[in-house]
Amino acid sequence: MAYLKGERVDATQMVHEPWRALANHPDYASLTLIECGLRASRVTRRGRQFFKHYPDIECPIQHKSESAQHLAMKQALKDRINAMPEWRAEVEHPHPDRIWIADVLATHASGKRLAFEVQLSPQSEDEYIRRSQRYADDRIGAVWVVPDDLDWFRVRLPMVVTGFGKSSDLPEAPGALMDLASYQPLFGKRDRVGAAVDAVLHPTFYWPHGTPKHQLDEIAKLERMKAAAAAAKLKREEEAAELRRMAEEKAALKAAEKLAREEETAELRRLAEEKAALKAAEVEVRFVASATAPAATDARPIIAPKCVWASEVLCMEGGHPMIIWRSTKPTTPRTPADTMWRPPSENFDNGRAHVDAWLAAAGSSLAKAKVYQVRGQPMRRTFVCPECKQVVQGRWVSALPPEKWTLIAEASAASVGARDVLNRKPPTQPRDSSEKPRPGRLPVQVEESDWRFIGPRRKPYWMTESGNEELPYRLAAKKAHAERMEQLRANPRYRVSPNGFRFECTDCGGEFEDDNEGIHADRGCITPGNRRFGWR
Image (tube, rainbow, N blue to C red):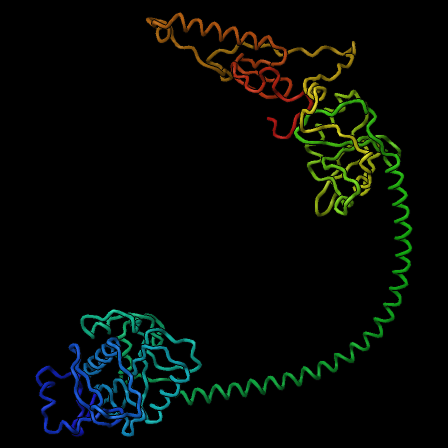
């Protein structure tokens, strides 16, 4: 924008021929820039028409160049405002003293004026407030056209959010910018840019928040009220603190008297605890002194998935002998963690079967301690005497030195003698003559029509043997299968099902069908009486 003999000239609105003829105008020497009032000259560069200072003129004002996006938005606003009845838009309208220059100044027939400021670059809140108040002082409403919603401001300003920034693509026509949709603070919802501009230009539009100066005064007033309320609250708190201090002094006197009584009680309790600790230590010493290695010391350890140590102890109430076990290797000297050792669940669930197997292999009649679940949280277990049900304290068990423990199960076949234990059968007990022998389970023939029938069903003769060239080989395979089935039925280790096709191993309880013995072949199943969790 420039002035030519007092008349505004818009470089962007002039066509090519008048623009070229402008240099030959008789008053061309009076062409001045709007911002500084200094002489200007018209320039065409790369198809763009604009004004600049006349050569060799120094200007104290730093002129800012506008981007193509900024120019397009100003043109779209100008066209939208001029399309509204009784409104007229003027681009780059300056103050008479040039203290401000509005990007687009909208003037109504009634005299109402609105300054649309296109702000595509970041700007501080104080700068928004300063420029808005500068327009308000001249009774002009400032409307900011910004890319994003600036909801972090202290004061509220009329804003039209476009979502169109300096790096956005230019539309083919500037008017397309009015069709962009974004969240509009004026409506509190998402709407088009053109609708927001029309709402501001509507005669009924009213800005209820006032000027920035008015809002800042209200904020300062509110802060003063908050400060006064905080001072009054502080005074009340000081008075309450004084009353509280007096009450605390009175309570301190009572607390001192109570403390003296509690110290006396604590001293008595300490003496009682020391006495109980001495008694507990004596019991622990007696428990450790009574503990020995299991009686069957000549029995070698059995082969098991893990190592298990055992010790023979006496209960402290009735002196009943029993055997306890652990899967944690005893150490010398004992560590603090070992001192607080508590038998975990694995010492009970997986170690019990190994203890039974070792007792059976050693032929020992030593009673095995029972496992008792202690109430409370966390849930844990401990040993109890099988006779008098007295609990064996975990600290007693942790106090046993390593020489009190004997390895009864090891996790590797380290010697030929240890491997022999794997196939050793428990000693047979003499059977009472008065006891009647238990009848064995005899195989029961089940027809194919019975629901209990398991196994392959016979096919008609005409589907299998008739006309088949491989008949001799199939008959030989059937005969071998029948002989193998007869061997399984005659094996005392297996119990046959009623239909004759399923077998159960008496050593480990596992089942298999037909002649698929799997791990049961050649006594490869688990040692009798040594069943572990999940064996099925």
